[in-house]
Image (cartoon, rainbow, N blue to C red):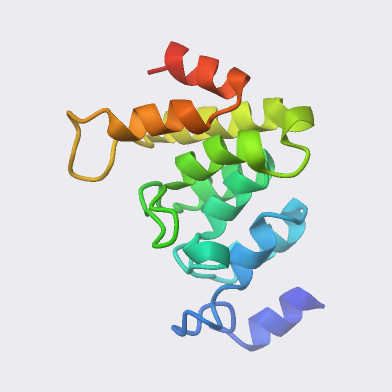
Length: 156
């Protein structure tokens, strides 16, 4: 039924209004893959901000949703948008989430999987425009759970 509604109303998932287009960001962190898949297929804006100015990929990263992160990356979600609240990329949200998101300790392998996906897709370990500066990398190490920090060190 949802697919019929979207087919009859093209553009409903991407209106051009950031406040209206945040649905993908809102569902990517706390839901299974089906609504994310549906919204991507409907043309939802992959860059639209949601909670704390984070895109859908930020949300999937923070909440430890590797399947949703993979869908978003495969759909072309931007890897290097730094949110305006925490000044952090999706990689930073995954790293921070690995330590501070609810039940993160029990889901550390999910966070490692997300960090791996992001790095494999080309996520950077530095702030935009500063490829020779390690400040962001050191911030990531400080924020990370022990397992994620170890993974970052090995895969630098």
